[in-house]
Length: 296
Image (cartoon, rainbow, N blue to C red; front, side):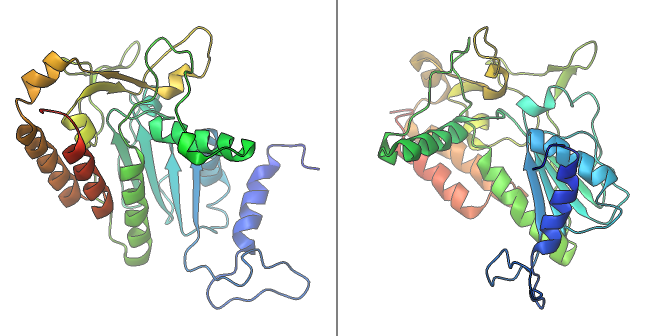
């Protein structure tokens, strides 16, 4: 029985060592945990609390005996030492920067950080996937997946798709490891005040400025933030918020559907060029905009 959290670091190292790389084979008496598959690269990753523990691992354990080819830290984790050869990519939602924006860590040859505007620690996509897990457990059709009413003061779960730049970040990390091609950098989220508490700069709708700006954020149809609160649910601060614009506001922003599509198309084009999204995410974004009722 494992009864000490500190043993998790040794376990994490042991798992990495147990994976057979290309050209390796399992010794007699040992278990092939990939059942015959061979790893070309082994990448460590951790989200939220796991990201915090992964940062500790990277700062104190991994430099002693590097095991992982690269690391993806997301949704948490403090400052990570950059005096090691292992490539570390850190990608953060708006929620995650509330406690970290006042102490930024600069990008280096082995460290890269992205901050995604308007995203939340646990967003709408996350909530839908969690709903599917509950439905599977209960033997109910996945088509019935829906977001819960989590009892927060603001309508919960940002609709800005964190997963789109997250997937692109993994592609960049692999290329960074294999070819030493540094990922594209990105502007941080913009602050209006750092002391005594962090305050983000926002536009007239309340949407945050700076950071990687996806079409759903830069061509807004709602106020999407990484912030929320609630007296009955202590996790509300993780969910972010989503407050749709009124019809009058939408009409003032997008006089017709072509105007809306043109704006979305330009942001998608720019994000593709900058390397912040992958082609399939671009296609998905354009299809969703095309089928929307905005400007009709």
